Image (tube, rainbow, N blue to C red):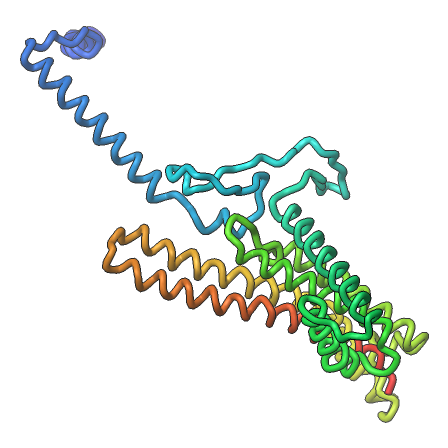
Length: 340
């Protein structure tokens, strides 16, 4: 029995030996003609692979996301058509970093940070120039004209028709902040429509910061106007109900009141961010159709629609700055008058 099993194993090894030798043996040399044909086929496959890779890289090139997201480089004009008439200027990245808990904060400037600086510089220059021109005209006993006249008209409209009626009595103290918010958002929105620039208000971090500052202004205004009565904006206590009804109603409504304090600035941030981002995505998507179809017959249609959306974006830039200021004024007025 044992000798039969050994003979079976030996026969299996002998049968497998040629297969193992064939597997590890060097490949036979092909004839010259076959080798040339194989080389040509390999070269053709490599060229086809390179062509396919190039087509995939071209197809996967994203022209939308870099325009609406932040980055560590600025896009500047260039005369090189191979790079889309644009060149990239790298921003410094070696600025200090600090930690807030486990979250690392890098103070190095980004593209949208530079856009905020540019917006602030433009706004300061325009306001100072308009104020000086207004002073010169007033010293001569003449009404303002040009830039000073346009700025005065916008400021008076926002102050008299939007801010003061909604903030309420003694609301003059809030006019400088709300006017600053209006003109800063408007400048940042319009700057995003300029080629090679970026829309800072199309970033949720920027709009969230603006909403956070407005939230602090709203709550501090309520504390100053209401004093101890400010707690009534958090804890709902219906005085005109019996006690057995006050407690359950208070337990139900108080969390809603507390949440509403955070929902209001969240709505401000998301509304501005979504509207400014959506418009740019639509414009870039329409322009992308030109490169997708690569046809002179189809190109005029998406270009015409992109121009129409850009004109609409010009109106949206003013509208969103106006809405942010209007709602901020309404929220400040609501918390100041909540004791009535």
